[in-house]
Picture (cartoon, rainbow, N blue to C red):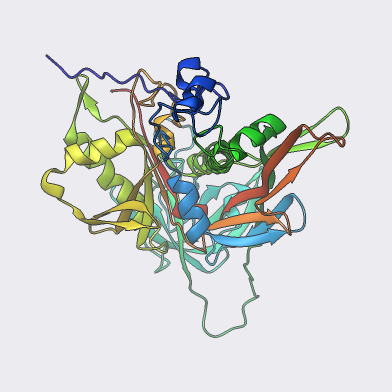
Length: 469
């Protein structure tokens, strides 16, 4: 018989209406006049007696807020003067590769198809056509290489001219006499290797540079409130409730605020959005980290064979994910966080027995970290329990899903990559107030203005499980 899950995962199994806990309205549990006469009601008529109630209130919550903890402690902090916050990112290096564009002419190197009317005729000079955007990568006297059927051919750019809406690079063989091989296809790649200028005469300068791109996020208004009636305050203060209910409600308020902040950071959406209300106000929605990263660098793989977990598929996917994200983005940190859902954590346990590939575990600010490594780099695995409920993939969570799947979000959690943005002077704060001069209800509010910005997002990535292929 296979495994059967027996927990229905009630999100709040212990909530009940106000005053139904820690008080009793059963007359048999209260002191009476007769009890007082025989010294059983010494605490007074109506006092709670004949009850044994623990003085400590146990608090249940389904999960902790690991991502919020890590981002608050290890992320950077940058206040902003308005809810629309921008930053620039520039590239240290310039583009170096372009794709060919088809042009049916006999002198076009990337026109090798014998079925065309004007198939390329090999010569020591020829044109290689690229798009106008890719044309900006190349200049005269650049040494280049392009893809051929057997590898690469090297050449020198000696001219550059517009053709239709594209750009034609005139190439010559490096010795000026050997025929240039045809490219592998019309869309073959061509790489700029280096500038290789003539040595005797003056050559016109060909400056190249790039401007930074601008990115932005919005700063949201997160707010939670509770209220305490005059009756509740009185019952708590005079000890008619066995627990300090006001303290309980306040703790619940602060934890709800933290949950909201983690949900906003992880699942806010793919792009910043804003909504204009009918009275002229604005609701600002900042982007969620997962969707932002997935929109730039998302990898997918199936991890099952005939419906059962396949550890070989999983190991291969993790190896390739590390290869492309650490080997391909080698300027990123050697140690990065890998935020995983509970299902993905289970996959790691099943794939590597006897903690192979793991270098132990530690607790950072109360958050458990398992260190995984291979030749490409190190990934500190941190579970996000929130994803047991609000999973990034449809119907995939262990609490309310029917098709469990795993996700991994690679993110360097440091001051270079993760920024917490708050309106100046409007960070997390609380206040207690009454409405319109009323004196029966007292309100307590916790609020904060916060957005999360991810910089150098190319050093982050997402690995998401897909249906079996």
